[in-house]
Length: 146
Image 1 (tube, rainbow, N blue to C red):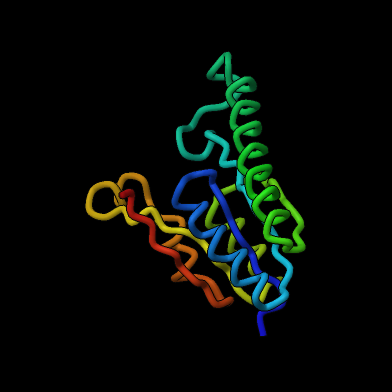
Image 2: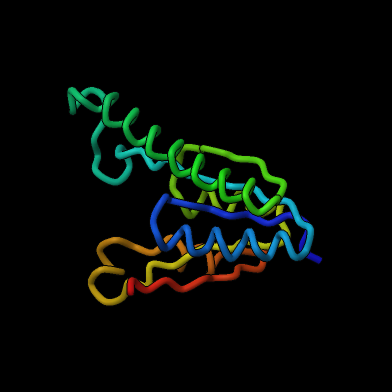
């Protein structure tokens, strides 16, 4: 059964919808969760780095703080629901980091922004990549803004 559930978050409303569903499931199953935020550095995607952008380190620190805020929100939700958890902030490509961490879990629960068309092509889809490459079962929680 599902005893260890991975709940990735990017701090968005869609991710929070996935978090809430995952936490409710974990509570019902008496499972523990791993909360995960992946800090995607700009270097691979934009070919930027400390030597090319003077404010790179400050930007990286801003992104790290954003990740810590997202994890803080997720841990508060877990505490409110009485679910045991551990929290991780890692650097790398989001889909790759989620897939790697998923190997030690029974289930991955994540929200989906529901992007399609050009948005999906330009912005990519972490959820889609995880869904297609994961060896661990993945539960996708769709999110549509009201």
